[in-house]
Length: 134
Image (cartoon, rainbow, N blue to C red; front, side):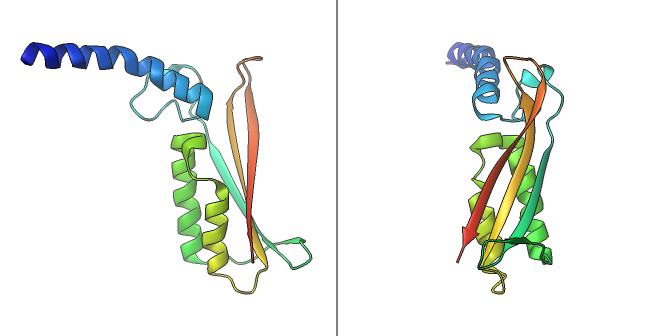
């Protein structure tokens, strides 16, 4: 029994770095997190999230975010920085913020994150946008 556990542990320890690297490449997961060794592939990635309000005509406007909105935004940034595209889409964050702002016709969220482009071996910023409307 003990021997089987040791063998299983060694097999998992051998496979996990390859699986982690595949997740980094496929889903833009943070290579510095989740106990992987893919951290030697790129610098620690950063995530930046911006929000905006939408008028009934669809024009983007600034709005005052509440402390709850700031907390949700920080939590989403943290999760997105670790999980990459495995994190929930920004539409969900937009829906949460919109539920607290009846004065807005909609809320948009833009997530900026960089990753290593496998073709050029350069760091490239990508953006993903989500929105929620009434």
